[in-house]
Image (cartoon, rainbow over all chains, first blue to last red; front, side, top):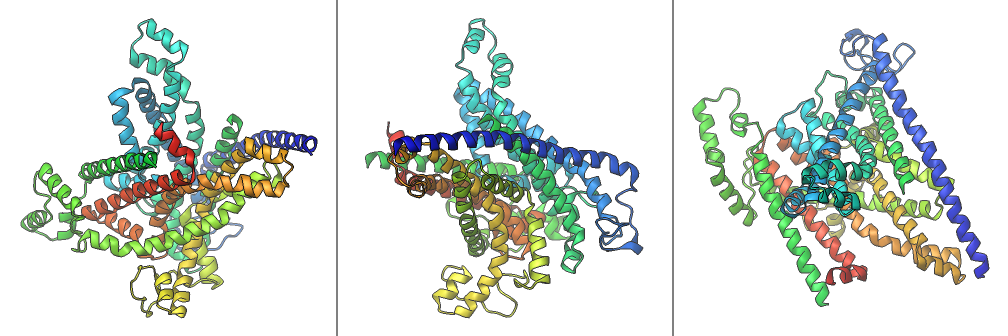
Length: 285
Length: 342
C-alpha cells in the first residue's frame, strides 16, 4: 500500500508544478496580448475616427450594424468610437492610480518598517484605520469629499490602495533590515533614511510589484464605478463607467448596446491585468 | 481558558482603539468636505441671513474643537446628529435602513459561499488540471466584471426581456404591504408571521440583486478556499493519511476540505468588504432602500452628518465583524490561542 501511494503523490506534485508553470506563462502572454491590443486600439483608432463627443441626433440609438459596429447612443454618437476612445482615459487613470499608491505606499512602508518605534506605530494605526473601510467605499468618500472630477477620482483610488502597499513593503522591510548589508551600512555610519531608501526600499518592493498589477485591475473597476455614480470622469468625456450611466435609461427601454460594449471593455481590460498579476504571482510562489 | 480570556481582552482593546481612531479621523476628514450643507439646504434664492441661521442650526458656525466636543458627546450616546437633508436623526435613519442591507448582504453571502466553496475545493483537488485552470479563469473573469454592468445587464436581459425576475423597483412591488418588523428582513419576517405568499414575493424581489452581488463576490471565496485547501493537501497530515492507505475521497473530504474551512471563516471579513462596496452600487441600481443608497444620496447632497454616520457605521461594523471572526477563529483553531498566550 505504502509503496503504491508514494509515487502517486509525487506524480500529483510534479504534474501540478509543471501545470502551474505552463499556465503561468500562457496566462502572462494572454494578459499582455489583451492589454497590448487595447493600448494599440486606443492609440490608433482615434486617429482615423471622428471626435467621440460630436452628436448626430438623426442617428440616435441605432443598433449594432456594419456602419456602427457597437451601435449609437441617444445623441447619435458611435458607441465603438467612444468605447475605444475611453481606453486611453481608463487605462491611463488606472495605471497612474496604481503607480501612485505603489510609490506612496512603498516609501511609507519602507520608512515605517525600517525606522520602527513611534513612527512605525503611528503609521500602522493610520493604515489600520484606512483598511477598516472597503477600498471602493474609501475611494468614494475621498472623491466625493474633494468634489466630483477626474483628478479627484484618481486621488481617491490612489489613496484607497496605498495601505496595501504600506503593509507589504513594511513586512519585507522588517526582514530586510536585519540582513548583513544593512548592518554593514550602519557600521559605515550611513544615515538611517539613506539606508531606508538605498537598501531597504529596493529590496522590499518585489511583492508590491505583483500587487501593483492586481491593483491596476481593481483601479479600472473603481474608476469606472466612481464615474458610473457620477463622482468621477464627467460626461461627455468618453469613459466606460460614465457611458454605462449615460446608457442606463436606454438599456431599460431595449437599447442594450449603449452600455453592453463599454462594460465588455472594462471586463477585458481588468481581465488582462488580472491574468498578468496572477501569472506573476504564481511564478513567485 | 485564562489564555482565551486574555486573548479576548487583547482583541477587544485593539478593536476599541480602532473604533476610537475611526471616530477621530472621520470627524477631521469630513471637515475637508468643500460643499456647504447650509447653502445647499437654503436653496438658490436664500439671503445671507437665512444661510447664517441654518449654519447656526446645524452647528457648523462654531469653532472646530467645540464641534468636535459635541460630536464626541453625541457618539457616546449613539447620537450621530441630524441629517441636514431630511431633518431626522441619522442614527434612526441608518438603523431603519440596516435590515434591508443586511438581508441583501446575507443573501449575497450565501450565494457566494454556495458557489465559491465547492468551486474552490474542486480547483484545489484537481490542482494543475484543466478543471483548475477553468475555475481560475472563471474567477478572474468574474472579478473583472463591473458590478453595475452585470446588474444592469441582468435587469435588462433576465428581468425585462425574459421576465424571469420581477422589476427592480424596491423590496416589494408597489401596493404590497411589508410584514411587521420583527427582524426588518422581509423574507424572514413574512415566514415568521406565517405569510408565505408574501415571503415568496419578497424573496423574488431579493433574488436578482442577491445573485448579482453574490456571484461577483464568489470570486474571492473561490481564491481563498483554493489556496487554503491546496496548503492542506500539501500538509504532513494529508501525506500521512495517504500513507495509511485511506481512500483518496476520504482524505480529500475529511482531512483536506474540513481543515481548509477554517480560513474561510476569517475570509468572511474580506468578503464583507466586497459586499459593502458592492452594496452602494447594487442598491442604487435595484432601488433597494438600504445603507448604500442612503450614503450615496447623502454624499450627493453634502449631508455631512449622514455621511459621517454612514462611515462610522461601516467602520464600526467592520471592526466588530472582524473581532467576532477572530474569536470564532480562535475557538475552532486551538493553535491561535497558544500563539498569543506564549
